[in-house]
Amino acid sequence: MACPENMLFLIVLFISGVLACFGQRDLITTMPDRLDVLTGSCVQIPCSFDIPHQIKYTFNSTILTSGVWIKGNPYFGERPDRVIFNSSKLVNRYQGEITGNMSQKNCTTVFFNVTTNYTNKYFFRIESQPFRATDTEKSVNIVVSDLPSSPILPVSGEVKEGTPVSLNCFAVTPCPEHPPELTWTLPTQFTTENQLQENPDQTKSVLSTVTFTPSYLHHEKNITCTAVYPVGTSNKTAEHNMMLNVSFSPKDTSASISPADPVSVGSCVSLTCSSTANPPVTNFTWFKISEGQEEPVNPKVFEIVGKTLGLIFLFSLIVFFAWRRRTSRLPSGFDMTDRSQGLVGMNSPVGTVCSNQATVSRGNQEPPLNNLDGL
Ligand SMILES: *[C@@H]1O[C@H](CO)[C@@H](O)[C@H](O)[C@H]1NC(C)=O
Ligand SMILES: *[C@@H]1O[C@H](CO)[C@@H](O)[C@H](O)[C@H]1NC(C)=O
Ligand SMILES: *[C@@H]1O[C@H](CO)[C@@H](O)[C@H](O)[C@H]1NC(C)=O
Ligand SMILES: *[C@@H]1O[C@H](CO)[C@@H](O)[C@H](O)[C@H]1NC(C)=O
Ligand SMILES: *[C@@H]1O[C@H](CO)[C@@H](O)[C@H](O)[C@H]1NC(C)=O
Ligand SMILES: *[C@@H]1O[C@H](CO)[C@@H](O)[C@H](O)[C@H]1NC(C)=O
Ligand SMILES: *[C@@H]1O[C@H](CO)[C@@H](O)[C@H](O)[C@H]1NC(C)=O
Ligand SMILES: *[C@@H]1O[C@H](CO)[C@@H](O)[C@H](O)[C@H]1NC(C)=O
Ligand SMILES: *[C@@H]1O[C@H](CO)[C@@H](O)[C@H](O)[C@H]1NC(C)=O
Ligand SMILES: *[C@@H]1O[C@H](CO)[C@@H](O)[C@H](O)[C@H]1NC(C)=O
Image (tube, rainbow, N blue to C red):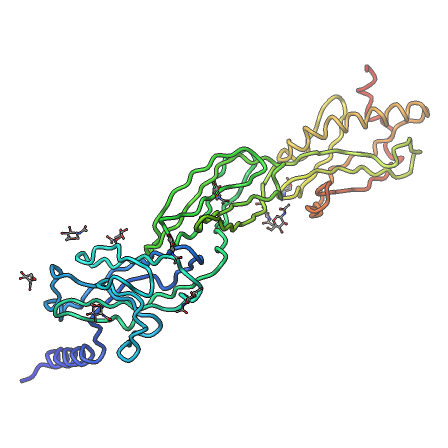
């Protein structure tokens, strides 16, 4: 009695046999999908190949194997001009060399003196005794241009003032014999480290790492990574600009009073506190000085407080002496603990500006600044 599982197994075997017959690929090459190349330079095509298990016995790696590159279309029977390189010939349409060891199934190839009409897709073929096969399913797309592509600056994490930061820059290196030279332009001192590295698709890149310590003065300043490709006796240059975004604590914090002249009781004065920070300041805290004690309202903003303290003190002095000259009693109109959302003003030179209005009231007749009498 036939067991259903055995039937299923036979069906799977049959189907895979049919697939093997029709979808057979006698040569399996591995190479990048695309290579961007510079006119006049060379191109190295990283390449390796394998032979499917069923026909492995027909390939004898100890027998000299030649490698053939075919341009545009893998079928060259009626178009022998599609064969642009044949390693068993001394003269070829393309100047090149298979630098890989074919006995180790390494078909890495270099073509020299690349011109724009090399732009096309290319197929690989091996010819041995008796094994001969072209991989018709895989090709490498070579794209030749007169100008090098810009190096890549991946987006970095947060750049903080005072904390050393390292940034990377990558430049494609289609011709590893003549790699590009990478240089940096920064608004400060820096160190760099360059190395040639291999990408997952076996192509090469030059990686340059720059290390520097940013300050708030470098915020919104440009940094540039420049790649110089040697081509023959000249150079070709490509660069990438990036604007630095340095996060920094509040700077240039200042307070001012308007009108600056003495004011009469009952009129309005405005106090303005401004500060530059990235991200912008969202919390400003005002506090008054009374009975010789400082009463910071929001302990989280000690930095702002410390810097505004001096200015507020100065302001208080001016107000105090102005009012004493008028021999009028001082109301306590500044008993406020306002918090306000800062306006995002990153493009203005002042940065975030916050302003609150306060009205001098008659209610409290106690001089709030009498602790300054001793001065
Ligand atoms: C491969 O070729 C070499 C030299 O022609 C021969 O000695 C050897 O037996 C061959 N190996 C196989 C597995 O056919
Ligand atoms: C490669 O060159 C060899 C030797 O001249 C020749 O026998 C072979 O047919 C050539 N292959 C192709 C695809 O042109
Ligand atoms: C293939 O040969 C090239 C030299 O042309 C070499 O750089 C590369 O590492 C080799 N690849 C492997 C997988 O051995
Ligand atoms: C290529 O590889 C074979 C087998 O690993 C080795 O015997 C031969 O010396 C290698 N040839 C070169 C030029 O490295
Ligand atoms: C190809 O490039 C080589 C140097 O890589 C140079 O010596 C040679 O003159 C060039 N040939 C042509 C035809 O441009
Ligand atoms: C490719 O272009 C070069 C000049 O750029 C020319 O000398 C050569 O004949 C062209 N080759 C083909 C196959 O069109
Ligand atoms: C090419 O660039 C290198 C450094 O990247 C420099 O030393 C050389 O002088 C430059 N050559 C020309 C012709 O500009
Ligand atoms: C800074 O880089 C930007 C592009 O990111 C560019 O538009 C601008 O001109 C550069 N500024 C300077 C001063 O180089
Ligand atoms: C700059 O960085 C700050 C803080 O990390 C962030 O809030 C802001 O969105 C960034 N600005 C840009 C233009 O990336
Ligand atoms: C502003 O200060 C208040 C009170 O200390 C606090 O609850 C709030 O989280 C602060 N907001 C920001 C954005 O820091």
